[in-house]
Length: 153
Image 1: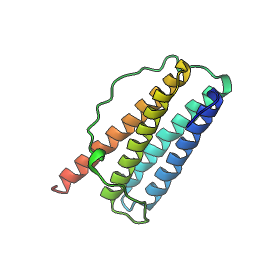
Image 2: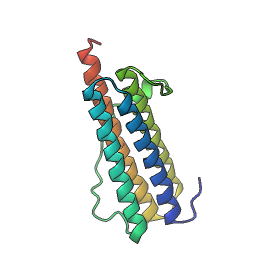
Image 3: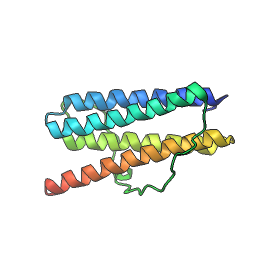
Image 4: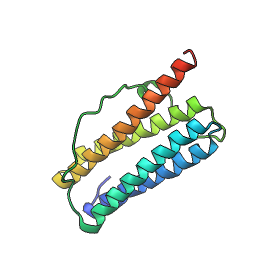
C-alpha cells in the first residue's frame, strides 16, 4: 500500500476503525449474555475513540504529540488460532477468538505500514495505532484465558 500524503493515511485508518466499530457492535448485539454484550460494546467504544482521535488529526494535521508510547506485552494466544468467519449466534469463546484474530491482523497491518514509510509523522501514527491494537489484543487474550479457565479448560 502506498499513500501519497498524511490525509490518505488518516482516512485509511479511519476506515479501518469504522470497520472495527461495526464488527464489535454486531458481535455485541448477537451475544446472548449481558457480560459478553458489554465487553464487545466497550471495544466498539474504544474504536470510536480511535476514530475521533484520527479525525482530529485530519482537522489540523497535528502530529502524535503527547501520546505516551509504551511496550504492550503480547501473549501470542491468537498466533495459534485459525481464522474464523463471523456467524450469528457464535459461541462466546469463538467470538473472542475471532476478535483476537482481527486485532492481530490490524496490528500486523499497522506494523507493515510503519516499516514502509519514510515519513516520521506517518511512522508515529502507525506506531500509535499499533500500540492501541496491541492493547485490544492483550485485553481480548486475557478475557479469553479467563473465560476458558472458568470453563475448566
